[in-house]
Image 1 (cartoon, rainbow, N blue to C red):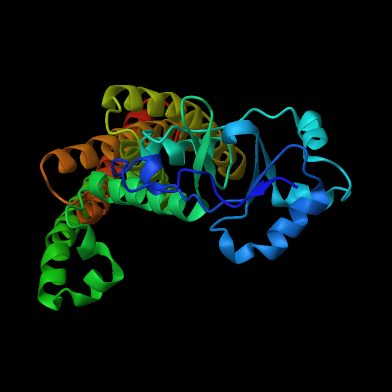
Image 2: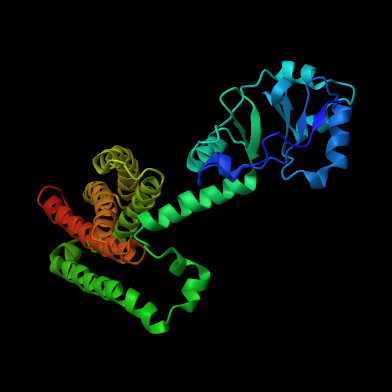
Length: 344
């Protein structure tokens, strides 16, 4: 039985930081293609503590050249007399590997794309040097993506946004960081109320219009929140993302969403209230509110970040009130306009 518990190269400290070579572990189960499944099972059972990861068993030829990978689940499902070579011939797998110099973010990306729990590290000749295991991959994802997400969201001090930082912050500082945005939102709410008051004639002529104000406002807020979330996530994953390209993509999606939602609410209002006027107000209002939400949800977080402000605290209140004011205003403008052409 030809078995090894680790490849010849067990020194990883010489590789640059943030690379596969520095992160890999050399304590992995390696087997020869002539090994039987029974031998593999014995290796794993007798040397569990010797291996740092046992998600996979790595099949190597002469000089430790990697030729195949078997998951533990596959191994224990096979008859004990079968040879590893026969099992590999049945699989015809495509090996997913990285070089020692591969950046850690690229390693994590490959693991996600190919749904792997560990990524083998090989040299230019295909020799297996080690494996970046699942613990390292999770660490990379946290370091490269979660922290990037916070940074792209305007959070400069990552430590301050941990649980320890949150509870350790003074009450005065916490209130000071939030209150200005909420006061801004309060002022915006007053403006929205003034807009509603300015369209008293429309409300007097069709009181049912007031019942649909929350719906229009909610749809604008919901769509805006989706756009904000997608923008921050995409910026975290691709800091070089083009803002215009993202905006155009969101507008394409927005057209479809607005047509469907606007059409549904128009049909509902027509059959429920027997009013062509109400349907012609609600449909276009939702359509306009959708595009307002997309623009605000894209531009506000972007500009706050560029100005060095914290979108984590400012984006929500600011975008919400801007969307509310714009959606309410457009709703009543459309309602007043439609009064001239359709019976109320």
